[in-house]
Image (cartoon, rainbow, N blue to C red; front, top):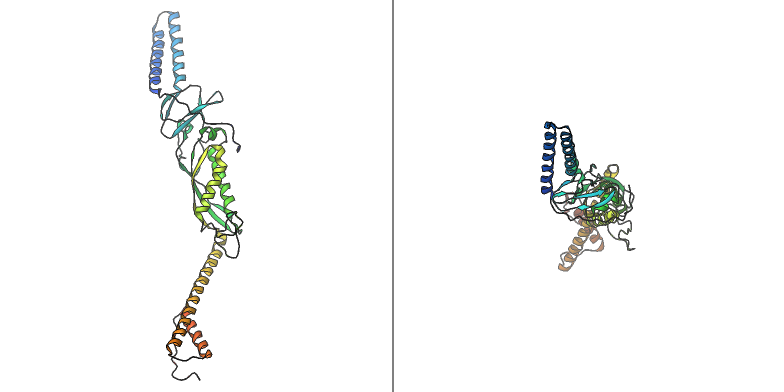
Length: 333
């Protein structure tokens, strides 16, 4: 598949929508030709009958050839025409047109079926020659890619795109749909490899390229990642006359072979964070309790009793089960 842009630029043909008038003239020519053939068949003169039949046959051939030049375009459709191997121009306005009957409509991606909007099976030949100018969505299959830390992940994207230069789309690459699909997969791999799946404080990772470590990740910076993917795809498909409207991440997860292990790691990290928060709160509550006891003079505690009280309070506050207190009726000593 060619990836080099050719020196093609779109030339829009400004034609009058005169197809209905030409179609009526073709119909009259066809009727007249059939009448001449019938007249020649009924004529008794040999020379006259042969002349009428030949003239009528020529008229039928001419009307058939002229009929090939009738083109109908709907809104948001385009027709790229070539004449004897040369680019003749593009019709983009909706209407009923008559063009040179020897011109040929070109669409190399007419029969390409991808996982995207606009690819419908059972199209007729004429519709397949037309190029859609509508905004379409490409949804490639999910890919397995290693992230920055080497962990295999599964990721899928949906790319919204449209054709802005029909000449480049048709002539600069072999098949603009397959070209877009390939470049989307390649750009996705290039960008995903620069990010970890999730923020890992043990590694200092620079995802922006400014030389400073940051907290960018695929899961936490999905909007930024999607924007970078869009820009990367746009650079790659510019030569094909395509415009990337939007790129969104539709699926993101660890690969199945490490998903269970990564889930355990996430659970452990969450448990550690929760315990750290509980301990911080418990220490603050113990400190507050000791300060109030001392300020209000409720009881005089030496260092040993303070240590015992702190130990008991921390056990009660940090335990994940309800405490069963023991009432002491006597002295500790």
